[in-house]
Image (cartoon, rainbow, N blue to C red; front, side, top):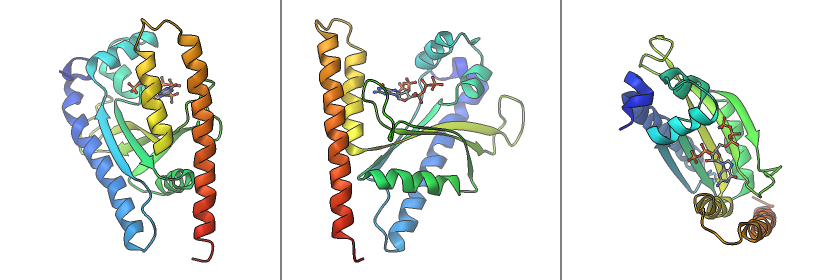
Length: 205
Ligand code: 0O2
C-alpha cells in the first residue's frame, strides 16, 4: 500500500514512472533507427515502497509527509538503465540533458569516481511536468525521478553488494567488503578494456 506517505499523490506515481520509461525507450529506438547501436541493454523502473520511503524520511530527519517523500526525497520514482559499455552511459546522460520533456536537476558521477566500497553508477535526478497535481498543489504538477545508469558489470556487482547490506548475520563482513572492492575494481578494468576493444573494432565505421 503506497498511499500512506505519498498521500493522494501516490496513485499517479506508477503512471509517471511508465511515461518516463517510455520516453527513454523511444530514445533508444530513435538511435537504433538512425543506424546507431542501441544505447542500453535494458531498463527497469520501480516506485519506492512506502516502508522504504518512511525509513528514508526518518533517516533524514524529515517529517512523514507527502512533501518530504516527493519533494525533499526525489527518488520515489526510480529508473535503472543498464548499458553494455561505459561510453553509452555518458551518451545517454548527454542526450537526457537535451530532452525537452525532462530537466536534470542533480547529477552524481560515481562512474569516474566510485564510492569507497566500489559502487559505480551515474545518478541523475530529473524533474518532469505531468498532467497531475503535485505536493505544492500546482496543476499540472512537477514530479522527480532518480535515473541510475550503469554497465551490466556494475549492475551485477551492485546486486551482490545489496544482498550483503541486508544480511546482518555475516561472520566476516570486513573481509567480504574487501573482496567486493577488489571485484568492483576488476570489473571496472574489464569495462574499460571492452570499451577499448569496441573502439578498435569500429575505428573505420
Ligand atoms: P534503493 O532501495 O535502491 O532505492 P539520497 O539519500 O538519495 O538523497 P544519497 O544516499 O547520497 O542521497 O544517494 P545516492 O548516493 O545517489 O544513492 C541513491 C541510490 O543509489 C540508493 O538508493 C541505491 O539504489 C544506490 N546506491 C548508492 N550507493 C550504493 C551502494 O553502495 N551499493 C548499492 N548496491 N547501491 C547503492 P537507496 O534509497 O539507498 O535504496
